[in-house]
Structure formats: structure tokens, C-alpha cells
Image (cartoon, rainbow, N blue to C red; front, top):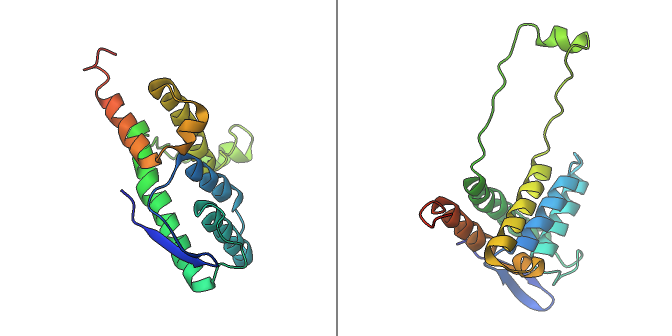
Length: 171
């Protein structure tokens, strides 16, 4: 269950109390593109995220600063603290730590070892959600569009249950 977020626009007060797979995918794509350090770029992407999550029911100009910032903060909390945590619980990602060596810098400087590029968290989230959608299509026998309309929290909880009980079900 996610907390309800509401915002006022020209048509009145609109709210969300669930996030679909499609909304989460759009959020991930926008967060991946939002690699800018300038505050104006960050504000634009946060407005775009708010607009997408609320189903494009308001224009960018309609989004008032205070209310929009409150909504964006709530959206980020839901996406990063609730949904991403459930996503990680389904796939049970294990962190692999590389031990540092006294020769690491020397090896990189002399071309013996390439410096590891920083892994893009949002790209990884996008890849994971794509895999989850493929699993859901096979497991639920739904179409891609049906999976995209599913409540992501309910879907992740169901997939976690299925994976936890796969041996009990003879799978």
C-alpha cells in the first residue's frame, strides 16, 4: 500500500493511491535522463515526473511551486523507498564488493586494468523492471499492455510470493 498524494489543477483536486508498472517505467526513464546538476533542469524533470504520474492531467504551467514540490517529494519517496525496496526483495540483489589493492591506481595508470565506469542505478532499475514484466507475462498469461496497467506493488508482492513458493508448487 502506498500513501495517497494529491495535487490541485484547473479541473480540481487529483490524487493517486497506486502506481502502475507503466508509471514506474516512465519514472525510471525520466530519472535516468535527469543527470543534470542545474537546479532548473532538476525542477523541469520533477515537474515532468509529477505530470506523468498524475496522468498528464495538468500542464507544466499549472503546477504551483509549493504544491508541486510536495507532490514530487511524495512521488520520489514512493518510487525509491517503497517500490524499489519491493523490487529488490523480488530479485534479491546481492552487493558484490571489490577489495581494494595497493596497486589499483598503478594498474589503472599503466593500462593494466581499466577504470570501472559507475553503474547507472536507473538504467539497472529499467532493466530489472523489463525482466519482471517478462516474468509476469509468462506467469500471469497477460499481454504486455495488461501487465503495464497492473499495480506495481501488488504485482511485485505476487511475484515474490510465487518465487518463494515455487518449490512447494512443484515448479
